[in-house]
Image 1 (tube, rainbow, N blue to C red):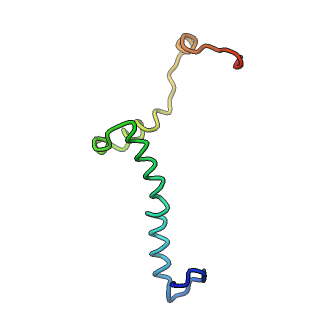
Image 2: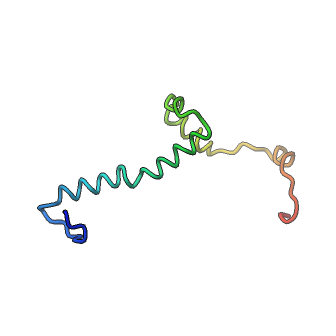
Image 3: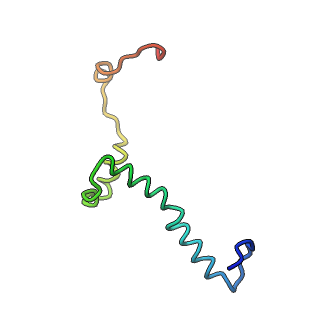
Length: 86
């Protein structure tokens, strides 16, 4: 697989192809996204202590909860509709 212009994979180079593809998927392709996520998280928390969170705690910390428990009265007390939104 020295010739990168030749896209054909053969039985002679299948192992090299699978290794390169796996490395790309597991590391090279994910690395920029992982770096951006860690940079964003470090703006909100100390990453050394983030490892103490359980997976569900991490999800709740990063994503919040999927339920909304606001009452109509709570919304009316805090939401003020102003032009151009009404």
